[in-house]
Image (cartoon, rainbow, N blue to C red):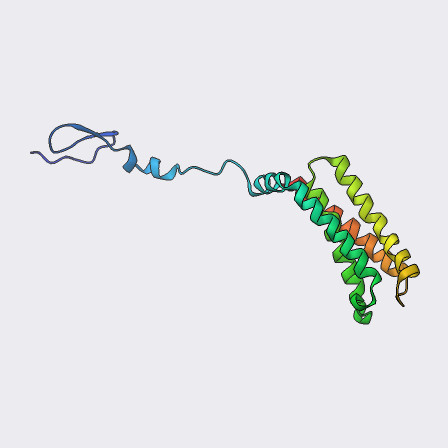
Length: 162
């Protein structure tokens, strides 16, 4: 049999003289691997939206836990090095971030963020009335409100870029 030279066509003759389709071995078939049709953020949004009821129930439980921890003296964070302000900012930022990412509708998300924002002065009022020695502070309330703003802005940026 004569030697075969390198061919650029898709069909090649094998030893018996029959044509074989070699598209599986061509470089173009290997390079065209399937690309994911959706981005990570879209898949994450779909997942969050699918389990939104459960996630919002967990969010409500988080609000209750924050209210309880804010009143109970044994959960008080030290004022040393303004650590309590960092806790206020981070907790309220997370509580504002969560419903914006979970809810699909803007009006419902805004309602939940307003609830979190009202929780900042509400927590300080609860400390003043039921605080077991805890003191209400305007600095704590402003730290909590700044956490709400930070969490809302971060969630807005994440949803906008995703």
